[in-house]
Length: 479
Ligand SMILES: Cc1cc2nc3c(=O)[nH]c(=O)nc-3n(C[C@H](O)[C@H](O)[C@H](O)COP(=O)(O)OP(=O)(O)OC[C@H]3O[C@@H](n4cnc5c(N)ncnc54)[C@H](O)[C@@H]3O)c2cc1C
Image (tube, rainbow, N blue to C red):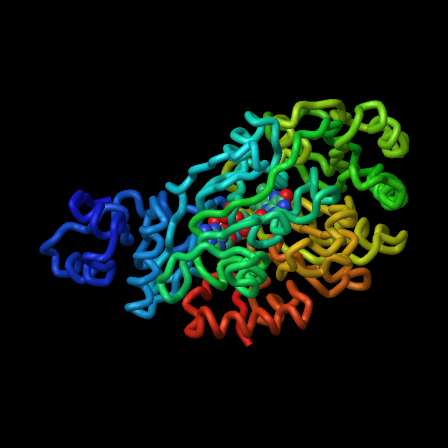
């Protein structure tokens, strides 16, 4: 990054004096150093700024703006608009979608990580780049929890704008998007506004579920909940017991209360020293449990699963909320992955057999992880303020990930697609937006993230607030 401290304040901090386009022109002329926070390919810091959590698709924008404030975001959008450049946003790079190329301006929100907890109002306000990890740490300090996801490395804003499916509290309280009360967003017109259900109901509807299609969010306020007791963890079974465990699971989920959240996954674990010995290099079936109630009640509920087969490892126990990430044990460092997804309306005996054939020990094309996550409960109920988050009638998500480098891409993508195809007979036809990736960016795929009437509303909104489709570097809403 080159330094021009006077410009740092005037250009991106306070205002308007000189836009990015003009600065780029000045750079090109070689007469003036680039301003602070503006990075171009080859600049020191550029690679680190664009490097995503999923390195299988690296953004290569001609311009990166490392935003520190909402004004920085606003100025970057205005400058991009003046150059008719597409605008992308990156908090962590967990969810690659459309490729980001030389013509694009990428707004990095990595430096915008402020979190404020208002314990009295049971609410949090986060800046655009806040991660779940430090947001949760702040809220737990006030004995409150947000509707966070399976791991702390995910960005709060990206997660919530895609719905936000908490594997701990979603079935109790619904999607994270259902509890958003205010969103600060910079629109395609370069204006920064606070959007609430009262100020612009249609934009408030679209932002919650529409991701970055309608603007770049600079901050968001949402509700928190008292910390409940947590009885949770993972029970891991050997690959050979997989079918028995999956069948036990499908029967068991029909019986559980809303306070019981769970998923089951087939995992091919690497042969690495950090993996516990009984699991190393093996295919395992893992059931993840998050019961938000008394431990004794949780243990009684989990008993039928424990009896399904002999576990290799059983970690389900009473636990502090801060230990929640051990339930899923998601990767915490950048991991190259090809991901596919579907929504299932049921998990019948036939569905389990099909899944085990496609993804079990004799799978024709193995992948790294196949997860079925139980929905229902409050996730199936309409929220207080309607939003674009759709398909609330789905019973399960299916998520498939093949971990590997670009050289293995062809085989991993085909393997992941094959598993989703095998589950087609039980699919609702819809998809959950947060689990969609680079192979789900076609207009047909994006339509599947929404109910048809919701997609039509989003198209109308898009024409109103982003008629030139400046915000298209995402799962793009177009006709
Ligand atoms: C290991 C792992 C675990 C996960 N667990 C869960 C889970 O439990 N539940 C769940 O629902 N999802 C989960 N996800 C999916 C996750 O919610 C999405 O990948 C989400 O988009 C990540 O947001 P991000 O900002 O971290 O990623 P990024 O890749 O930085 O952003 C992804 C997209 O989010 C949008 N976005 C980000 N910031 C802004 C902004 N300021 N303004 C407007 N749009 C913005 C943009 O469209 C952007 O392209 C998980 C993903 C991974 C990799």
